[in-house]
Image (cartoon, rainbow, N blue to C red; front, side, top):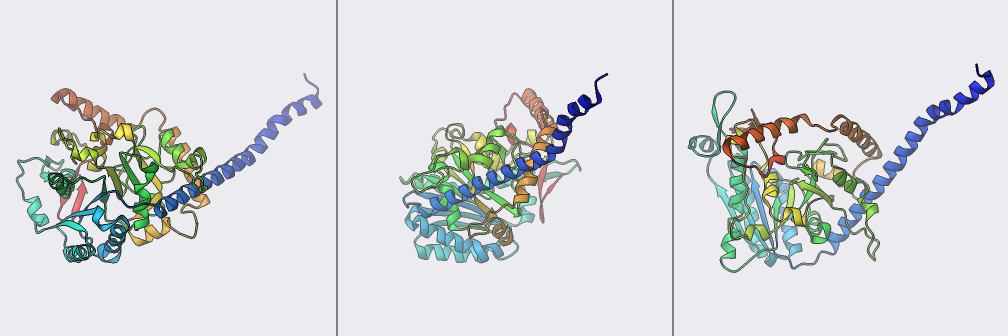
Length: 425
């Protein structure tokens, strides 16, 4: 038996470790929060610098679709677009907008915008479709884009419908090319609150080198919104709507540390804040226009085939566009966390507080980082939904001798149009 004095001494280090562990954990968390805050502040400085130093010259094709957006258009969107085209140079811009099914005066707001753009010297194609939602839902159910739902009804799928509208806005690209004119970038603008500064910064993401670049979008700040179209660099859907969002180490590290990993330029501004991902949309996206001019097969929006969707699967057209883009792997798809847009003015203000203030609190970062660790631990190795989706796609590919390059976009959902919008079924 050991002497009592020796026994007490041998227990001391272990006791000390247990006593100090909470203190060490707190110290680590404080250092981590401060480090992430510094990285995010550097990214915001980069975005501000890029917007302020943007030089006109690129030809930008702007695409947008609208539904029930009168209040947003008259309150924010139209003025922001007019400011943007002024910053880009009216002669460098073409605006293509498609609207249908709106029950408010969205058409009137777009007519006002068209007149203002014409006065500014901007070329436009603004289509105000008189087709009603009832007519959409009463179409040829034998054609593509219809599916049998679990309720036993044949209903119109949401994603093929949206893909068709987005492709409609891209028609002028082909028409203008036939006349000898090409654009450098295609900018897709959703029904979000944004500023010209946001778009200028987005255009300069990763020094302007990308296949596509997206903002971060928010409906209820600070919760990230577009998890349907976003996939991290490893092809996983976001783990959480809380920062730092991603399961992929590369995407997550870029978001939380990129400000420390890259050298500053002569002005002391960090040169890069881009987060590499496999796909994104996030309310605002800009793409290199090159794949839209490919002769053999122009890039376009699409949905999963009806026969695959019948397996209770769906994928965003805004994700599949990246899966089909031949430039995505070589040039990269990025999220710029220095550009944040909102689906309402309150959300936009919350994530763009101004005066050099950070859009995330210390608590948001602390809680989010530890939640992310816990969720990654629970999701280690196998994600149940990914297994379910992968199994269904594998069976479909075997049965129909087809392949789906956008398998990473698919989710265990079925989405259909309804008179008042759309629904999961």
